[in-house]
Amino acid sequence: MELNFVEDKKNRIVVEVKGETHTFVSALVDELWNDDAVKAAAYRIDHPLVGVPRIVLETTGKSAKDVLKKAAQRLSKKIDSLGSGAVKAIK
Image 1 (tube, helix red, strand yellow):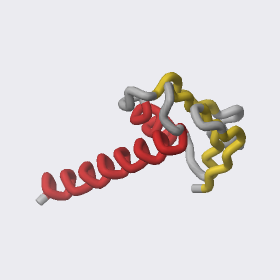
Image 2: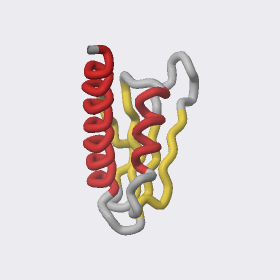
Image 3: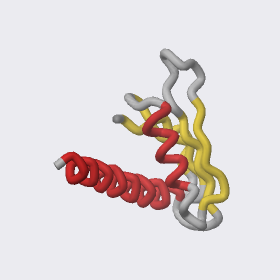
Image 4: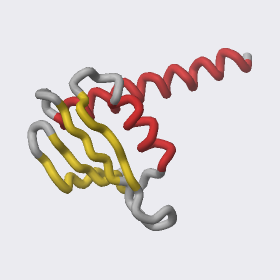
């Protein structure tokens, strides 16, 4: 995954997420909405086969980059716990 910040302001970022698809980006945007500082969070992919996902994030005062980073960390923990839960269930 490669991040390219198209717009980088304190309360608003637009970031391209190269190497990812709807699956990851949709989960990340959903996780962003769990932060009370999020004013707007969405993504789009211009072309389903060759487009690069682009996330738009606006916050009410917190650093948009910090909010994105914390959401990615929370999502990572959820994914890790899902994997370990599945392994325990199979045993």
